[in-house]
Length: 172
Image (cartoon, rainbow, N blue to C red):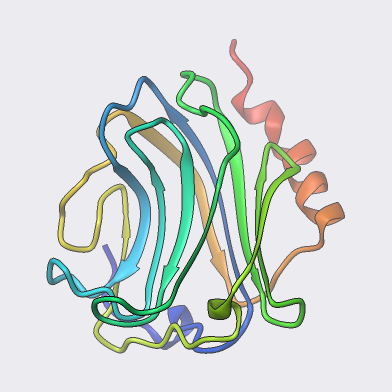
């Protein structure tokens, strides 16, 4: 967990998240990464990457308390297969889109309001492996090489990073 830092406050700009993960049969929502206020129910400026109870990976943005605007993208299939996967999530303000790549391939896109909405929250904490309020821990997950940036990679760069790193995560 890391307290608020201006470097992790993306406001209205671009940002990207990249990490390797491995999950075994998830039966509940489990957070990989969460940037939000630590009080339960407070969703101002929330950025979340989590495995839902249906074993689908979700990248979710929410900009206000209760009933605010939310955008999300989901993996098209189950990714809790006990194998290492690389996920890259991108908010591209210029294109007004969210992108999700898994293992170097684009798997989901969303055109939504939060691609230009603010994600500013000076009370937010950055948490890996649980929600900011310590609920929904990623107990069946393992994480590695977590990166978050105020810049966004191209699709070609996402594939190149995956190809360069995948050798570190193959069995044996």
